[in-house]
Length: 374
Ligand code: SF4
Image 1 (tube, rainbow, N blue to C red):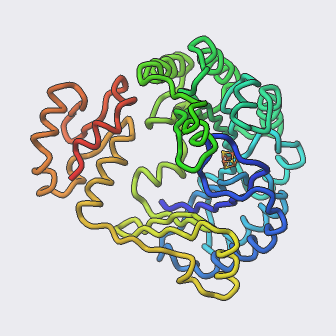
Image 2 (image 1 turned 180 degrees about the horizontal axis):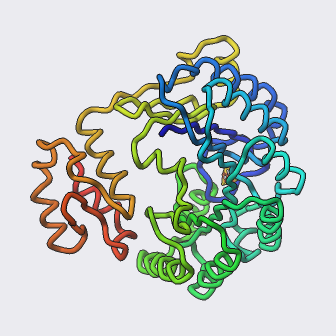
Image 3 (image 1 turned 180 degrees about the vertical axis):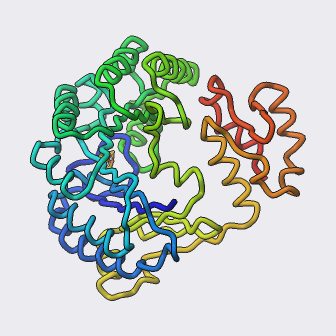
């Protein structure tokens, strides 16, 4: 198992809450960026050292802004460059306002077999406040178009935990979503990210986060309604029909190797080395054009404690939990007293070799995991 993530950091406008690296109104840089990606694909041809990548994820930014021919060009380069013979999953992130029958057809020809569509809410006033560029009806139509174009693996995103979202509206959003019956659902709590427009509003006293209690209630409503609708939670923010869990994202939680290509993309060698590409399109293009690869990439070597903490953090994100025998024994011995305490208080469930966070404590999982870090 190994995955390739390709970052396409271009957007038509910034969403209120977003802190991802992306550029707005820089479409003239697109061709140069694609050429730089080509250079990086060729430079990283031996990255996987014998392991064949079997998932591709094109994220952003807004990959759906790109022409299907450009997506196909990148997909061909990835297949040739990494000798990919069999893909288990090829996901493209798409915004509802970009989706057309022509693009759907073009993406399919490029090999895309899974779409991740950012819906976020079915209320137009929420969407306008978030500075999303689509309406509720556009999101519904986009989903129906994708179904008509034979996409049978679609993930939809929703956001909860923002000021003004009532319980009734949240229930409505979940019901609208499940009525569409996507294979996969991701739900994220709105957070105030430094550098986002939302952070400015909060600083100016014009936005106030809902209480922890309200957010926790919305999360448990989500868990209940999705379970009733036949979805299985498999990670803190992710739910799927049985067998439709996201394969590419699983590589992050399983600590298998993945390669991130493009400005601000991250990679992991599956052992102890993480890489982070420079978060600046122009510098990325210039460095790749000059074959100056050292300029675009920073390397971080994880210590044994870092690896242990990562295993805890990534393993306990999953509903299936973490195998204790995968942890280094002397470090496991150090956290045993805290682990026993968390098991006694019901924050952690221990079943033989497996420890996991129970569904009703998933909302506060960050705090539970942190107690186990070295
Ligand atoms: S949330 Fe997505 S579409 Fe919105 S600005 Fe961020 S990257 Fe672009």
